[in-house]
Length: 221
Image 1 (cartoon, rainbow, N blue to C red):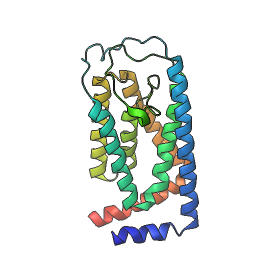
Image 2: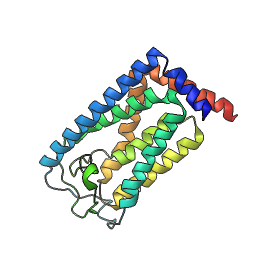
Image 3: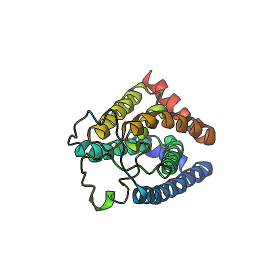
Image 4: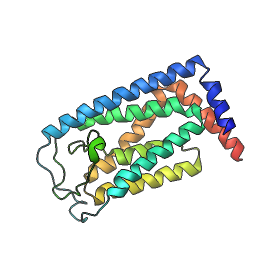
């Protein structure tokens, strides 16, 4: 724990790190706000549902614990990974924000209604402000853990943990008929592009992140 505190003390004393992190938080806040209004807009214009090859076959199954609590657990794991290695903060924060921003753009383009037979998840007051019925394409539950798998690709353990979560959440939203199959499969390809766009846009932050990965890999070897 003392080692982690020392790392935080060192990095938070660096002006460039502070500026990059603050910029990341501002970007994150803006992406969340834009996502909120995009979700509201898409849901207000959601029209008729369409048929789906996979959903037509799958029965509707109770998936609420994995969809809600499971995803919250994923976010907590991500926060822990950021806490134990501050070098990860700027790149993960900005990549996460870019993902949310790009997804917000996609969900306002096509106004397809949710699949007719869908599991009714009780979001609660807080989650109702972030989960909508019209924000279908593409699946955030699929894309975000896959984005983290790509970011942590050089760490074999976390790569496979995040890939496993990608598969679990993908199956979950399909079994609950929360997303169409195109939302799930499309998320993989779009997220891959977002990852490489993040590397291009946030080169310094990616270099800092990679330096942490190299140090941790050397220690594990």
